[in-house]
Image (tube, rainbow, N blue to C red; front, side, top):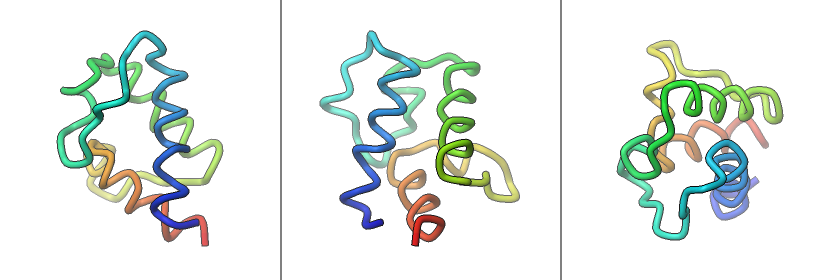
Length: 81
């Protein structure tokens, strides 16, 4: 998949985990948690859903590598080829 194909997938997952948040202005380089306010369990749910659906594993230094939309896309892209 391309980055353009991956972004809506991640956005859909985020929308399912935090349905009351407006995702229209989600910035690529700002941590997701600071933009839409998911708590730690919501953020973990987003990451677990990415893992379950696409086999995305958090990098060795943890889930914080997946904190931004840009990093999440970058981690998912090579795993979907």
